[in-house]
Image (cartoon, rainbow, N blue to C red; front, top):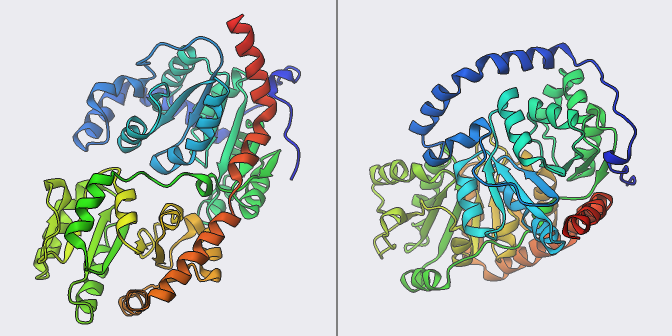
Length: 448
């Protein structure tokens, strides 16, 4: 581990360096297409990808007044990144620092509204056109920018650097798929990464990849998602679910994607030959697919119930489609066995940590590149099991359903792994300490 560089505001004057051709072309193209933003917004509104009352934020128009004093700007692409920052945000609030949190999806905005303190200012990240970015930065004038994982928008980064805004990449991740692509654009990514004071990487492998791509100062701090508190679950709703499923074996398929539900339905049909009262709960990654999944279930001859219709599973329900937002914590508490979605297709897998923390035995497919080191550690310890086809899934689920001691052993092993891999939050705060001390000095001066 290397030591963090001093904050940029303590450095000498920045020398202007010529940008690679790719970035110069990108700047001109995005400036040229900015007038087409209303058309893009209109299309995204039809697709449900924008909040109608907040479309101005996509053009850099602020919906809130900038608070007085230092402002820490944290940006994450979507739900996973935003939740990963929850612990860090609490630490910053303990220092009486104000937080601007940006993200790019409607679902992430909903999660912020439900699960974050009301003093956290949320804005949608502006489209990456120079005029929108300038408007955003002119209004907010952040004191420190923390970018989560790998959501790197060129104009946003270049404009922030031109204003000498200190930037740190936190919980940095460079996937096996992205790394070779960026290697083919080495000058582009090297320039962007070179604008960050520090890159705080999730793993040693991520750190090596960021360094190879041009990050000048890389520190391995671990994965912040390991330190995130388990998602909440409403006790009254949980009790109702437990009452109607009591005595039934339950499997939860979490954050599933198109192409996975068909496989899971085949698995369910096979397993009910041995476990006749089995209930499979499917929690789609995108809740709007709930109706489509329910129709698919009905065509197989199975009975489905939809949570979005406020239905509870009955004795006749084989598949319960939990097509609502923010209730994964509820279903992780309901079932002792969880299949992690996004892993039977080449999506890269979903985060298993929350399910582990709520006492689930984990089964997943072979495609887990998004969390490869976490899954490797879990698999090696016997805390998770890989299954890539119907036959293997049936065997894994059958073993865990029929052998409570084996299931409990896997839960204990997974818990031990997560505890061993924790500590990223403390290491991240330690790496940010020079910046936070400077902001506290500014805060004291502002309040004097």
